[in-house]
Image (cartoon, rainbow, N blue to C red; front, side, top):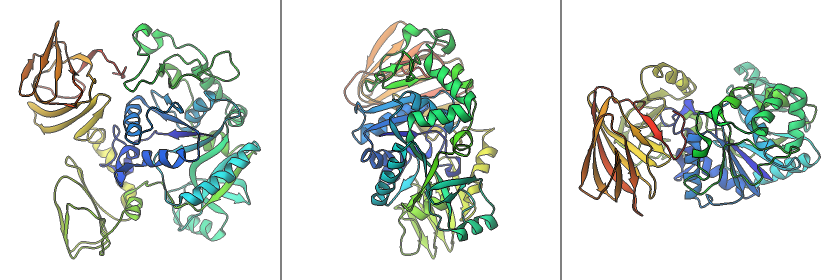
Length: 496
């Protein structure tokens, strides 16, 4: 059985913890592990293979977190890279088309929590047995209260009778009383070929567009780059295929490819739709397995509060937190001391560059805050510490005319060959060994040595040693936005 892990989404309801370039599935929320890592560990115990669907930025986050739990070099892990999200139906279809038609797949989001793993394994076995009989299986979570934030599945025994949109409180209460309505978990189990047959039957436009995206060679003109320059491997040694040679039943196959990258033009031609709308609500082959597995989608700060350990006053445990007569608060922050006096039932989240304060029970509205700040800042997009394929950078100070960063580059990692039109830079090595390309020259630098990068000059930073390279970068100019960059050559083939 193959676990298809869907890594899309930016988790706006958990802002400012979750942001576009570090979404909630990769944030280490529980015992220094991310929800993505917990998903990997949980499903690796029941699945032979992993198939991770993500975008290019998340791919490198996924590789790093796989490496941390010693799964990065597994030959049983494949990756599908989407340049743009088209919802769950295309993502699942593309992955299934790259597998054998009789392969049973377990489709799971990357950002859900399951606490009762023994019961989880039992319901998975029940779902797997149904999948062997050519059913499409979904997992219905037994509701414990009248939740208005989830869709519901109406069941008649194991038969899925109907799918219902997120209800108002009155309807949700009626669903709870009825006893045959379940929260829609977004988890599925079926044979790859059976799902694709049903997709072709009920959503043929999606099926045909996905087949075309995976069944034809990607021309260099489609992706705007010279095919001869595309990397054959990523920084962890995975073979990267930017041709789409993949679809069972065709002459071509990606069974030997560990990384499949879809080009943007083909992806945009695929209609956008969820698996529920495209297939599950229409098919007559759908079964639902009732599941009481300690499940949470951790989809809001109220949900996160429920899952975190608490002190005797009901406050989430945080070593940076000091309180007087304060109860039942979610306190999140690991940089500054957070203190409260005589408050109850609040959500306080401090990330260094943003502070969120909300009443408990109102945290679903956080996504509306993200919409308000999206137009005039990058706070929705990136943290003070940003993760890149080559390492990280942390903004130490940001002013209109200058910016100071701490840059850390992994061993053998290197930034793109680039130039800037509006700023000059000064680099000082703190530790490690740097190799700096400046114009036509290549200059080695060690601790306490520095170099000046003039505005408009081609340059590149590389870690030439076996230990992490740490430098302090000072930028000076009239415009210091991250989009002031022209990449001449990039090992990681990121989109501009």
